[in-house]
Image (cartoon, rainbow, N blue to C red):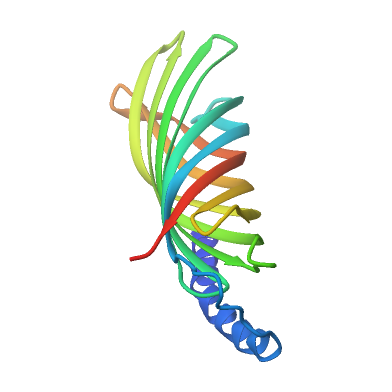
Length: 216
């Protein structure tokens, strides 16, 4: 819970810090209003998991970590609040099917996140950024082991931290590249109506996205 509290505090502080930064920055910089800016956007995102991890921990027993290298996909809708802050809703899916020792793991994860980005744009073309996200993930976990078949699901709190670069191709189309760490949540596995094991799911991933900008 301490990690969640820190992330929430940072997300709340980003707009205030950006507001102060904008006031100082605009004092020295002349704005160019010749190009129309579209503040709202929607698009798609593909992410490659360099290491999505399933940390399977048997109560009063051993533990095992399964790592996979796979792909996921998602969609985003966001709004540029000012010259340095963006707010975004992201929904994404990733699946993992791996085996380790005598166990077979099959997990599906659907996450819905609210992301806040702090960015700096150069020449209205390139914008490095950093961001934080918080939301909820639904995890469906299926474990087939010699001692039985366990299938459970959970709706859990999720958080993420990311950094990347946004490229503006024109007034309407943006591309972005980034890297992200996301903690998806924890599934409790029950056997004979008792909690037998838990699985923590998190991932480090690279992502590529494209958005279409429009005005509302």
